[in-house]
Image 1 (spheres, rainbow, N blue to C red):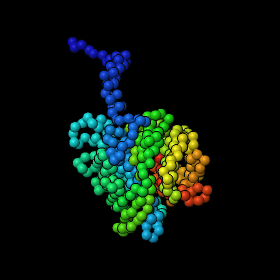
Image 2 (spheres, rainbow, N blue to C red):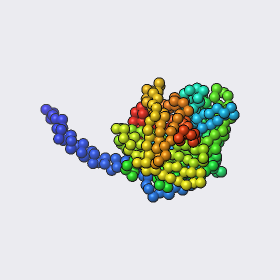
Image 3 (tube, rainbow, N blue to C red):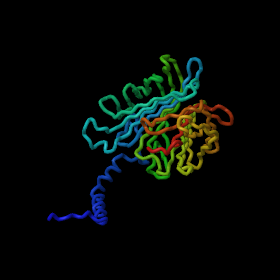
Image 4 (cartoon, one colour):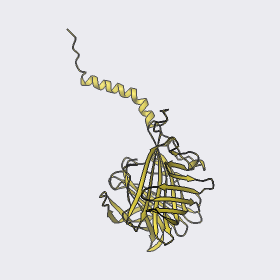
Length: 367
């Protein structure tokens, strides 16, 4: 009669699992270490570092600004291109393998509408339809693009059913390296960092089109370019970030990383005056204090849209252009966040214009 085989005992099953894990350990370690690390002693090199860094896990080119029409109407705008490396992005030789994913967000803050209008795109890089090129800023998805010309001027175009942009952005100041010569800490552990530089006070001109009506605009913008392989501490809930082009020619950037328990995991600020002098602020010198909370009618998230921010002995007050500047990117980047044009005040005086970003208020941000 045939011999009967019994099921392995729990002990045998455990041993088999241990053997399997040992066999897979080199592969798991390779996957964990497949992305390039951010290290403190790297020196940013230009024009090379204007371009993409495909060996790092995530990267973005992020433009925010205020525009003004010929009728003195204020508008806020943002254009952001993300690049993210797919797992084991270099191991599959197929042209159809998604080695890099490109994501783009574009938004317009129009007080006449009273709400943010936005659009988004996602595509895997390839076939010259979507890419983030090395050596210089040149990112694209279909007919959306953001590019740096050889003369340093940026050009961007976004075509959407809701609105369109055609903008040129000209630098008026030098690059602003964030953190320690571009090494920007994002948490208490040294590996929680990014490479990060900004270009504040970009002079903007071009055309905004709504409902088939093109409008000439001028204004000022801020560009951030950042890349990393690990940014957030596992205890992090999200971040609050603000950049401002101040009227005296200075530039201010402030952020904090919030813990899930409401604590401040990390914070940093830097201010560069019009003469180029830079002052940096350590975590204990930076505070964000909510002044007024707005509840989104779209997601029911609560955002502190009016803030007081302290950098050292200086206190700033942020007032939004209007409240409803929430962007729901769950169809692309997977996050819901508030991205708003704000006016910056000090002691009741209007000091300039900026953008405030609030993430992790609907659910914890996972990069």
